[in-house]
Amino acid sequence: MKVFFNGRIVNSDSPTIKALDRGMTFGDGLYEVIKVVNGKFPFIKDHVGRLEKSSKFFKIKFEYNLDKIEAIAQELSSINKIESGELFLEITRGADTIRDHIFEKEYAPTFLEVVQPLRRIDANLWQTGAKLVTYPDMRHGLCEHKTIDLLPNVLAKNYAHSKGGYEALMFRTKNGEKYVTEGGSSSYIFFDGEKIVAPKIDNILPSITRSKVLSIARSMGFEVIERRVWLDEVQRMKEVMLLSTVSKVMPVVKIDDMNFSFGSVTKKLMTAFEEMISS
Ligand code: PLP
Image 1 (cartoon, rainbow, N blue to C red):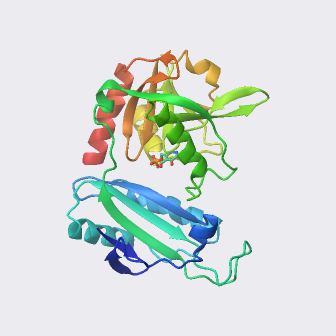
Image 2 (spheres, rainbow, N blue to C red):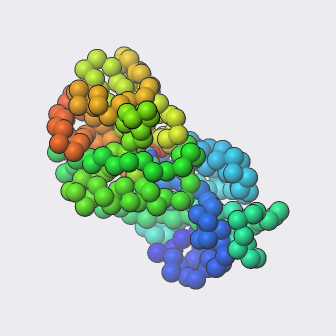
Image 3 (tube, rainbow, N blue to C red):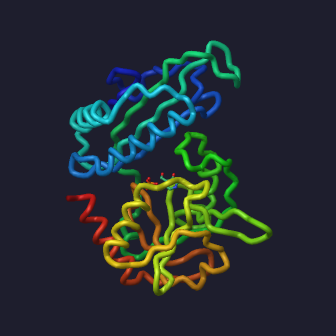
């Protein structure tokens, strides 16, 4: 497969990365995943905007812009003959001359762009619903940024998979009470029978799918409440939805031993979101 790496299109197995790249040595970088649908990149502007905002926050030089990133993505999807799949962007601070936590003054950032087929997701899950497994959220305090240091997310998702689940439902604890944060690579929203309830953006990723789905829900007339969601109250929720760029809107029918139905609100939001990304 061909990828775009630091200004050139190269084979994905070319040895191009510098050994002391801070992405390798410190996980010092950011990434984005954007859906590829019929040669188009839904919400690419939002994704690049999020990347740019975080790169400013971490003072990582951002040398690309939306037009350039989209043009490269189009070129890669045509070279690799991928009409539908995923676009992956990664930017790291760049390579050190000696490994040191302290930043040097100037870096040439490392930039990678990949268009690949959609990862393997069992298509039945959109009909039958997914199972989640609860797992403690062991991450840092900068989870509103899409940083590449994903080991706790990887552990969470692998734990869920080892228990037969599709995703983890991560929780943090405050004064002995557990509250829902997000998944290893997904957001969650709930329907409590009257309103849509979404864990508020408080040290979780401002998911682009979540923001689109909540705006669809509002436009359909649903009341949307963004607040802390306690794990104890989840069992009273009528419907649970998993949201992400690659999973889109996916019904959740089980969290540990709790069962949920794939109800009409989830169906409506799934249909409307599907229309939005394919229009
Ligand atoms: N939360 C986490 C931790 C993620 O990694 C992701 C996506 O990878 C999401 C939520 C969903 O975000 P988006 O809708 O922007 O893909």
